[in-house]
Image 1: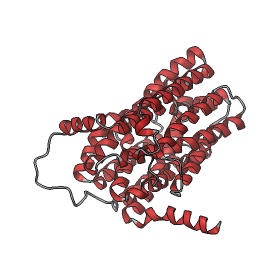
Image 2: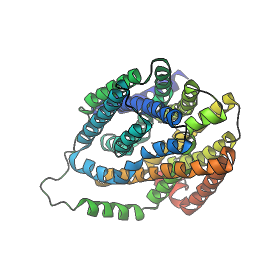
Image 3: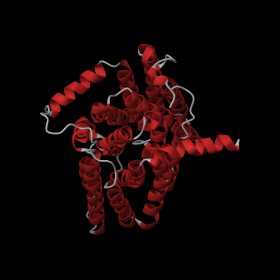
Image 4: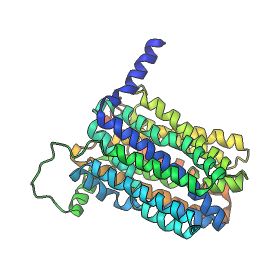
Length: 419
């Protein structure tokens, strides 16, 4: 037993031998905590101040508008290196947080101000995940990808546990200004660590004629179209964003206030329960001892995720709802980490930024799912909306498994190679 535990710990520590990954992990941790605190605090603020679930889902959707430009930021990362992009984006996060703190200090903050700032930040926020994954693909060996990606996911998963509880708690006890001072400091810490991650790869050929960004993007679309494993993975990514994530992200303030009738602290517990389950899943994957093939894992876990949400819809008991969200969070990690590993392994180095940027396009499923869910909840009610979404999700998962079974389900497929 002790030998197995020592082996697991050694596997978990292996990615940290890379200096860039150590600094990236610290930077990502600070950013993830700040982003999660913001999402909880501002979501609650918009709902309470406006009293509108429609405005809440608009606010939630705006955080993902920048998915459209993620492929172009991926191209920029391939050309100039990810250190430059990390510093630019995290500097902008700090500036936006400082603006909200100043507006709150002068009692000038309104839901409209929040939405405008969320629009600006939303132009780059989706690309943060793309940059993290692409840099890991650049700096980690292939046999450490799943482990490194799982450890990387711990930064966002731990933020959804501790960051959500801290953000909700500080906001409830001290108000908007102190919580935003903390958020700004976290972004500044992230900026400092981002200065120490790996830059442009040395093997990039200099002084050669480069095609336009649009030509680069066209090449990337052709590249994905020619690889069934990437098409199947992209389909899963869009599906879970469209039909699963709305219930654990944008709609949580509505669920907390209307379904369970709890306040900010209850909202923090709901968010943290999903994230705690995701953290457990990331820990399992971070040990690099997960034996189920990555392609199979993401298909099985996606089906289970929709099944758990189908049970969550009619649940009105708070503790049971927390337990179901925790289980959903666990299988969410078993979907997203293998998904990224499959895509990175199937992509040549010169395409990584563009392909991961295109993967972020799938995030557009989330704002679309949120914007459709709002009117459906008003018309059909929350329970029937949940049932409709999860039934469509389970059916689509089965269709994807059948369509790309050779690329994602076959045990001998590259997508199911361990490591």
